[in-house]
Length: 267
Image (cartoon, rainbow, N blue to C red; front, top):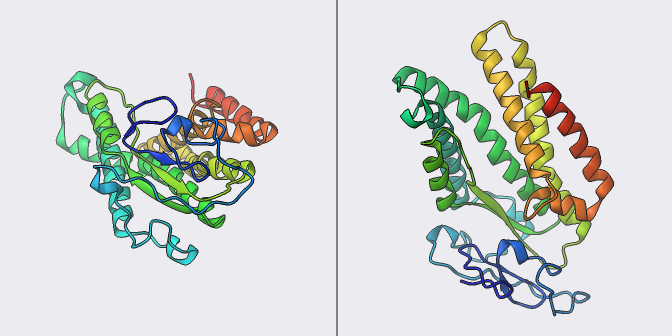
């Protein structure tokens, strides 16, 4: 399916609830595609377009369930979360042990590092997305996490070269008349959860046990990095939406993270 604004082929299309057009992630907001709909009027929520991906099929009888129903994880959503979590842990482990990454394979060490990756990397990505879901539901919008198979495949492929480009999935949110403040708070929730997780890991860094100290450092590092990266005020990242909502709040979150990252984690 192609974006009606830029023509880009989009496997995960968005439908504008004001004009009914189909757009890519970069042009899903009314201001991004020069929406000609009446933005002052409430519209009936438009169901997302169907695609060839079976994992995008709504898991309930209605794609926009009631608030009570929306707070329940569907079976498809739980499946997607588990697959994304395991795939990310496996990919991060491969970056260390693949021959292209420079290390020889050792099964016991692989199991240890896989466990560390599940504990540190998994929560950083998955809880980041789920925080968007919970805040969106708090405002009454439909929200569901969906994995992105191509993004997970890309993570596994890049891990063979000793680095990782991860795009495991996203929280899809739909609803009418979302305000800039609501969108900003939904977006800010993800980085703030990363900061919280990183803070919880950091005390382990001072443990006398080398394994716990390593888990503490890496858990804090990866979560601070994810928070900082997602707060960049560019493109579809969370930071762009927070910046549009409140530049002071964006700066009050972003600047301290820059200082913490470069003074605490960069040699």
